Length: 438
Image (tube, rainbow, N blue to C red; front, side, top):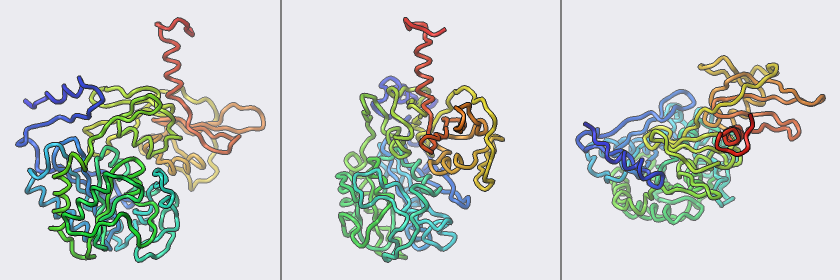
């Protein structure tokens, strides 16, 4: 019989501590291999997990494809070593190693991904308090070469979105690169990341640098992490070929030895008096607090998940999800009545395997830009025209996780506060309310 004591304790204690079920050491495999997403060309992006502790520590290799292939070799060597030494991972830590974040770049012998985008210049770094590193399309790349490889917009690439979703419940992350022979933290001030970089550099006999001073880095993954309060560092291997295994193993072991200080446990966040689990708060920040809207109430524990309603969406944090810890939940809305909106540009039509409904034109561009897969889900019906005053046109479309509408007055697409409306309606119709609508 599997032990369930810690699972019961987590339910009794509520949301203050994120407690995962613990099994006996002899029952746990040496590692767990999971596919966390796919590249633009459909290649798998995988992670290997060691341990079952609370503190999620992630190491990411080969963000820059073939030119930094030694970081992928190093990652696989670390996977082999921890597979043979599982006891090296402290009981309160879960170690994840992603050997290759950019498999398309590896396959194509390129620094960029299949779309020609530098993944370490593509992240939304506008979330931190430092404007110097804000995302830009024109970027500095290897050897300070300037090119338009930042992507069409921040977080535009499938690989960027995979790592964004995967890191929402992490305690710290290491992005391996080469080749400069130093270790540096995020540009914006982060005491934990600074201590993490100093510890790793000292143990691995690398130079510590407060930040990369060779040329400006915009849209960097480490700076994106700072925007969601995730300690992040970049070790730059000294060689472009040698994986420098012993030095980096020493760096990783030094971090693990100081896990309580360098891999902080996740704590609740308070927003306007509402309690938010840290991973949900990170989702709210990373995907756009202004789009999602404010939280309506404290998170509630349901079937082992922490569920929280916002004005436009309902989110659930699952501590046991290895791939994507925070996901949107389906919502109930009344169907839209009206004629199906005509399609004016066949090249912008998005189709889905699970429904005959499509997304087209401006709605399709909006869906792609905001990562509609995460924020909207599958369309429940086609875009429909709405009854509005003569001389104006408005349309609306329903999705699994939310509803969007074209606002002609401001010439933009907006998310509707459907969750908020549902909460208000439920409260008004409740039999315990003194005033009711019947």
